[in-house]
Image: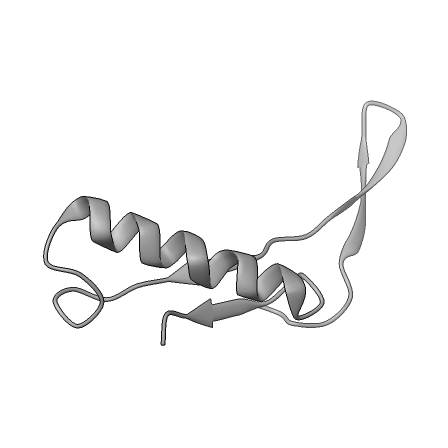
Length: 60
């Protein structure tokens, strides 16, 4: 994933800036079941957003 600036994409005659903030958790280190993994990935995603968006973060 590119961590640079988001690109403009023409969609239905309008230009939209699309970016992604991704949080990653890894089994079994970050959780022993689906609920824990999703929660920790969510925490990592919000950390990614606070870091400037258009980034990815692993749960730590």
